[in-house]
Amino acid sequence: TVVINLLSEKRDVLYSKTAVCNRCGISYPDINPMFFSFNSAQGACPRCNGLGFENIDEESSEIVTYQYCRLCDGMRLRKEALSIKLDGKHIAEVAALTAEEATSFMRNLTLTERERSIASRILKEITDRLHFMAKVGLDYLTLNRSSLTLSGGEAQRIRLATQLGSTLTGVLYILDEPSIGMHPRDCRKLLDSLSAIRDAGNTVIIVEHDEETIRSADFIIDMGPGAGVRGGWIVAAGSPEEIMSNPNSVTGPYLKGSLSIATPIRRRQPKDFISIVGARAFNLKDISVDIPLGIFTCVTGVSGSGKSTLVYEILYKGLSHESNGSRSIQGRHAVILGADKIQGIISVDQSPLGKTPRSNPATYTGIFSFIRDLFAQLPESRIRGYPASRFSFNLHGGRCDVCSGDGLIKMEMHFLPDVYVPCNACKGQRYNRETLEVHYRGKNIAEILGMTISEALQFFSSIPPIRRRLEVLEDVGLGYLQLGQPASTLSGGEAQRIRLSKELGKTKKGNTLYLLDEPTTGLHFADIERLLAVINSLVDAGNSVIVIEHNLDVIKSADYVIDLGPEGGEDGGRVTAMGTPEEVSRSRNSYTGAFLRNKVARHEYIPALS
Image 1 (cartoon, rainbow, N blue to C red):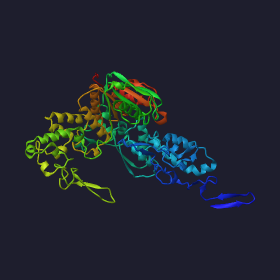
Image 2: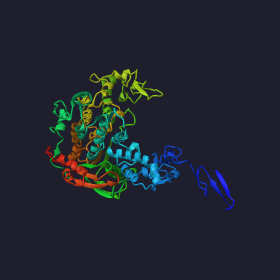
Image 3: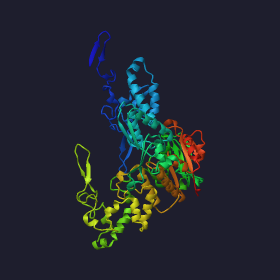
Image 4: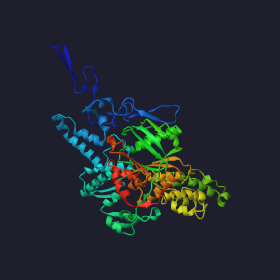
């Protein structure tokens, strides 16, 4: 810093290499990219360390509650970084824009000739990347969206977007159901992007159940014929036309049209309604919606149109507050009318079944309790004095003490990821030798847990409490899972169907509202038919079912459809159509209706529903 004394003007002039105010003395650090990063100490808010929130200390509450940071108001950056603006917006405001809005903002920036010459290359990089997001159907996402809140399909498509601008060739890309969560309208954008990657000299392999994606493939490998132990074979391979003509293919008949998911000939009529008035959370435009009761309802719309906000943030959290005093923060709305018309509300979501691998289908559904009781009643167990707890791999006594009932031993690899190997003592069976000496019909407890649900259904066919629960798991298409399969290895769709089976296995009470979010994830055409049968059995028992879904076969099978849109993000949040699938298919304002038109026009009927 240099101070120059101007004698003629009788004042000092301060010159500095740093950004400092002569009057107040406030200085700013060097402005560089890290200054705008909440992951850097240079840019992070000093109060919340760049998290954007802080926890509230409530001594009387066992629940940790969070609120936006009072210093940065959730923007995660220090005030100095937020004071620098581009065309009236600071970086947190730009990051809060959707990809579509950000594209418009960048293209309409007011810049001088000098500024434009400096920023032109950077702006091109930004707009190109935003364009790639739009090409894979993600232009509704805000740029500051947490990666933890993305669905599996969204996360895959973001990674795919990073590759669209690549000049790489000879690369093998493998994607697992990238169409998850995509409306049929957006699926075409994804397929065009995948075709562009292929045409650039690369190979694309996709694991997929979506009909349009399968039809668009150059080559199909059809696995089967069943699932689990009944699968593992290549039953057909070739072009879509060759698959359709192959008698061994399970997929071919559905593509050809000789097999299809039938359309109900009549629709159930609502018994009553729950009314949501003035819904305005996130992008919802102060809408009011009547939710029918006693029937099967689908909530549809393009990605980002407000489906989850309406069903979960407002309806589920609002009714949960009314029924059990839940303290979850509800989405903004005026009022929910008719909450007293149902006895309860249950969300059957896709979150993991348990926090540890010890949870499995048998323990979660309660089947394992009956199996342990059965083993405890065996003559050999009575002679040895073994109670039911002896056959639990979670308790000391019957489990293997070397691996604590895990069946695996963790080997720390230091600079590499940890490796799990079968326990040498129990050979991966989880129990000690004495416990494994007790047999029921020639099987010990470890061998029972190693059975698939289909095998166990035959094995326990004479035990009603076990058989009933296994039948429900079989009905929802999970017969290929092992009873003792760790919950951590299950997909979101499998976890959701296990939860659904648990509800179906309960004593029928009726008058409960069930919410499901895309239950067809990971399901083949044949499995979707079974899922629809399960949903209809819930409704026939006097319950109401609301499903958020993009699958047209499920939508056409519903009694009532509520379609939101017309677009995603700020251009969504409105009701574009409501009514039966036939009524929605006639709507000129609904993208869902346009795709549904051909589905409901086909004469594929099942017997009338009650």
